[in-house]
Figure 1 (cartoon, rainbow, N blue to C red):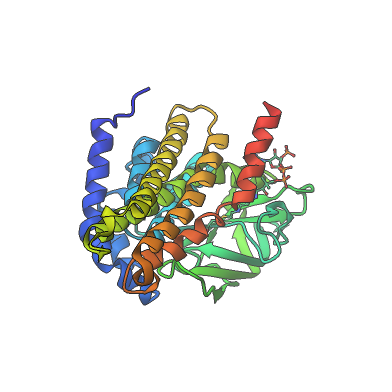
Figure 2: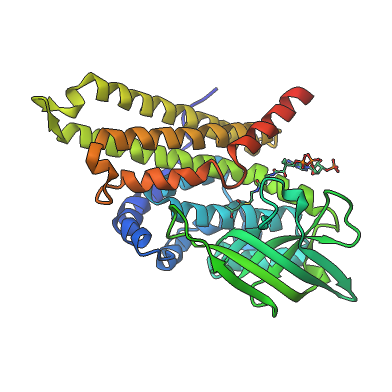
Length: 379
Ligand code: CAA
């Protein structure tokens, strides 16, 4: 077992850390407060090749090992959670789905543009009445000659408003119970409308959209995989992307630790700095230990993925632990800041709100426990 990163991994980590410190952090709070999608930042980070990290070079990407990608998401997540989820969905779900399940023609059409940042991708599984119970989706895809006609409503779509294309799941007439199909849907398809942007507790720079599909005609060549294979595609993609959500949780936890230490060293009370008080020292120790444990679980899941070994149980464990830890850590970091932590002036207030999404999206903590226990009881 080697806990040392490779030279290449260290280089990626340093490059993204510098970008996070110099480009993202200085404007992160303003973007968040103004609910502004970070369009210019996306263009800049695309130049570093980050948006192509899950795309092979033959399709214009900069594919690295999974841990390098995870280290990048961790650094971005430390700077701004909204930005990391935008990138995670684009790379870990959209690009990954097409690269893993797409035909050569689908890869040629979508991956080079997505990898270079000229287009943005989204992943649309959830519906108003089908969240955790994802196989109950109601959106229908009816075959009509060489097109599928899609009707339904999809919700909670990260990048849904800004994306150029979506991986979208719907049921065809042939799909059996609990089975559905996957489609690559261009955003400019007639009949596709963004009907709502959610008003959320946090992640304000990452708009979450609802989309309605009214007789959207999708060419049959945009079916991803085979009819009925969408169920496996959706869940396999989520197995993968949950490592990314774990990574952004670790990033947020690290930021909370950094902010808590900085504040504790400067704030004076009871004739010392907060850092001289044992109650605060213990909180900081707990934050650091939980962060490191979350990081190790996350890196382990990424390394298993790299080796082509089963990783889904470990991905769910990493997502479960890291997202729950991020919430506890944000709570403690805010507590250390006292009244100032409850004020918008300090970043811990934003971390506290953003972390809440991590244990909900891409599978709630309860769904992760379900997935983990199924593996354990099957093994
Ligand atoms: N990989 C491949 N196939 C899988 C799979 C996996 N990980 N998990 C299940 N399947 C297959 C099963 O084998 C089964 O097919 P067969 O009948 O051919 O064997 C089929 O899928 C249905 O599986 P189950 O019978 O296990 O279905 P279930 O209803 O009991 O449980 C679930 C499924 C695990 C609970 C699933 O619904 C789930 O993961 N729900 C959570 C959904 C989720 O994570 N949503 C996040 C939305 S995306 C998002 O948030 C992105 C964003 O914008 C931020």
